[in-house]
Image 1 (tube, rainbow, N blue to C red):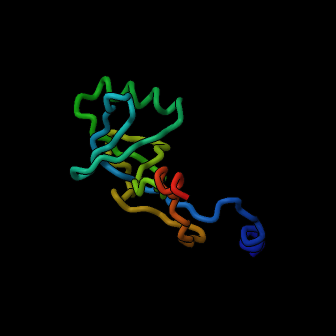
Image 2: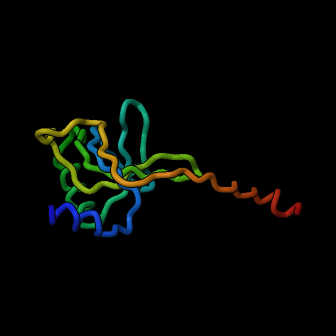
Length: 125
């Protein structure tokens, strides 16, 4: 009981979190941006520098470049594009992990933001 009450009183700075495992073909664009292709759609990837170095080494030695990626989804409200932040990667599927399923935790509420005026609209005001 003590552990439960301590967990309830611990405040988190994050209100919402999602983490999951995806599988796709990882590659670099001409601009040296990291992407993953899943079922014909490409998504932008970001990751920490240390992990990026390991990922580059794996891509150089593995001609297939299909990887399992542990990711946090990222959604850009302005461009309406989904991307992922990579926190780990695997060449084979980890045990007891489902691909394309995310664990959701926390409180989430979508608050519509006022759309930014375009440059032309801004100048005409």
